[in-house]
Figure (cartoon, rainbow, N blue to C red):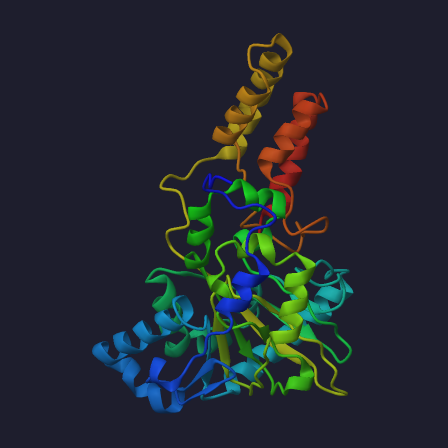
Length: 388
């Protein structure tokens, strides 16, 4: 069969995954690590923190972390990333207040890769913490360790986002998956992106988690499959039952303590674990950090374009002057075709992994023969849902 530069639903075979995950990470591979547990390098930040003030030492450390995340196991643990856990306790108290308020207001619900309502989740915990407690925010995120690992993978000018996940005793595990960007698309959508974009997706974001409490294995810390980020067709493969079974059999979990941080390549197969403890409310702040390069050069008011364009597209469609492929091309040029970024409190991924896009709304309005006024009202509602 010819290779046309795309993956399909059979890509990322179990044989590939098994061979890649048979690799081992040794101390010689990670000279700055204090130890390697279950193929995961563990860094003692109390020993390494002073090097962060030395440009050469900081660069050496970042280079090793980048190798681990890219060419190595794909995951690392930073012990005592927060040496002082007082800012974590302060943030946890703020997050608890936010959870109570959001529940009282009828919030919460949709979650990625887990049943809605299984967890308490705070979307956009970054902004909410800052508005709740600006000084606490500064003490929490004013952390040179977190800054260094983000820069190690993404370079400078990265964009921080965060979501709190609180899993109570009895909370079930997530399904195994890869993460944002392509990991949050359906298999059909992911298959439309060429293979080189599958290779690009993992270097556009970094996934992390800061432990807000001690997390023994029975509390369900993240399940990880070291080296699985190397599977080329993995964004297509993780949904298949044989891959899920391999993950379940071979994934590892490391206990964490309050103040520890876990970072991994977004293409690493992973899943939050099941909380089988009796009394541990497992709280983590999930950091999803994005490359500065994931943005267009110009700021464009695409909603204004869509409002102006809709009557013209309606007429061109009716007259036959633009066929279906031409209409699709015009919509692609005009409208926002991607679901993110959005306000996941008011625009949640209820019917899948991603909310409806502006482009999909425009196409639906054309298909259903809406009036310009109806489309304008729906477009305004769509903008309001996405607004922070």
